[in-house]
Image (cartoon, rainbow, N blue to C red):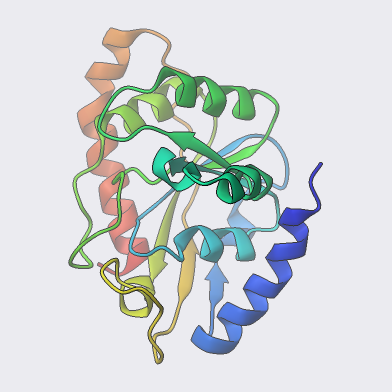
Length: 205
């Protein structure tokens, strides 16, 4: 197991706490072992560090494949728990990686919006992410990140001062594994509406 993740976690928590008062709420609701699928809103490049620095367990994050373009990032990102996904298309390899991680009891983070927001509001969810969540059969945790858009919006090259960061973990949802495609499609609209409402409330949107 790589030592890069724990070596980066504490400094990230201390730094984000010092510059943005990072705090977390709702961790006591979550199981301390077994697979979990975290589904947060996506406001900033800082979001993975925000989630990973407050979560007590190692978190694997689905990350856009272009982030792995350089040799240094191809070495570093997997050691920080990231695995690549090709955006705007079906990526079977990313889905297999996600499901394998959950099968061995890992915590996986997927941003259902698929990209960072441009205006701070919650964007439409990618149907593929929701289908995988329904297929996985593990507890699904809605997560609301607050303040990250003010801290580091996507058009800035560096964070801004003065923003306050917090992460709010909701009650786990347990829809059960929906292995049948028709069953997933039938459940999808209700699941999406419920998840969107929960994340919006947690994120204060």
